[in-house]
Image (tube, rainbow, N blue to C red):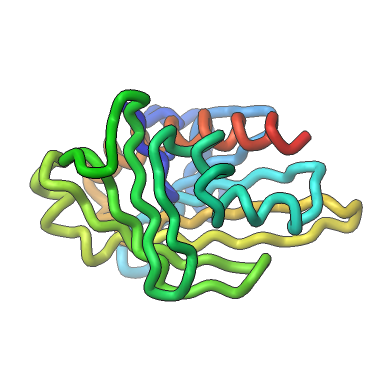
Length: 186
């Protein structure tokens, strides 16, 4: 099963950068682990697509477009304090114990979305215990050429082996999802 909130490249680190550790090499999608002053880690993933933000934004906010690239089973109530319910199994349903509920905390249209995940009981206990700390902030920036740069920050991860393994799992899933999105938009 694949989970992609905010959600995400391989746990083996292939290169280092001044700010963090670069994760697997991908021609279009950059993935990096950033360590904060509080010794927490952030998963930063970004890509640029040759499509205006007005075309990209609905793929994050409308159910029928979201299911084409992120979760095959989903329902989005896009508003402040709304939710995205997502099941990443092609034969899943939204009442399943594997369904993730992602709370939409706030947004600025075509600029920013802040999300917080509600971890299903079927996930590992350490994730459920820390779910109040898991956020995803997604930025949408217009490029000089009329395209869109999307930057996703997965926040709230402790700097230990369990969380690094989880980030590797999510990063890999996100790479696959973001590549699908790029293919749909270009």
